[in-house]
Length: 173
Image 1 (tube, rainbow, N blue to C red):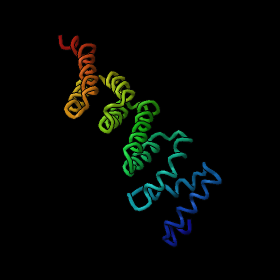
Image 2 (image 1 turned 90 degrees about the vertical axis):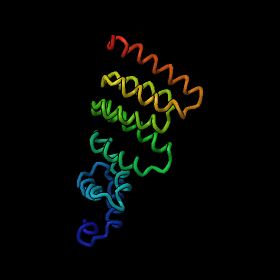
Image 3 (image 1 turned 90 degrees about the horizontal axis):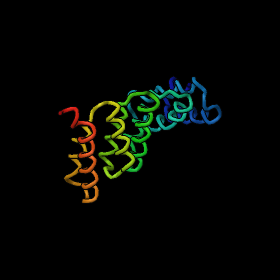
Image 4 (image 1 turned 30 degrees about the vertical axis):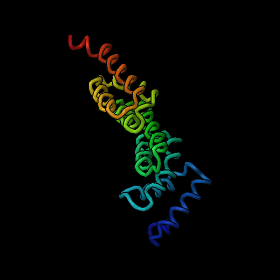
């Protein structure tokens, strides 16, 4: 506490707090002290989000975990890292927080990075059904058709036709 507030030495304070959490991963005062480094966004935000994410997951604080993962996703260096975090966010929003719209938005972000991921497309169909927004899904798939490889073009075209046939045709007839 002394390093962080009175001496204004965030680096030493964060290192101390990390060491403290390594001894007691659920120490709430340490977590509260670290949370001060999350906002405003600064030099230590990503590092602190990475330290706090396991605490939030353990304590099932899904809102704060989602925020920490968003910070990490924004700083992710590779597409694979981004995909991993976005898939986690989709699960947290959809299954833990019950926010199907936010889960769908993250699954769409996964699709934008990896349209060939069949598991994500299954999840997108499921989420579109939950939020009753098949039109957005068709638009997303349609936009990906132009730059997709031929095999993916066929798969997406088939899925568009299937979505239309199963979910939109009867609603518009």
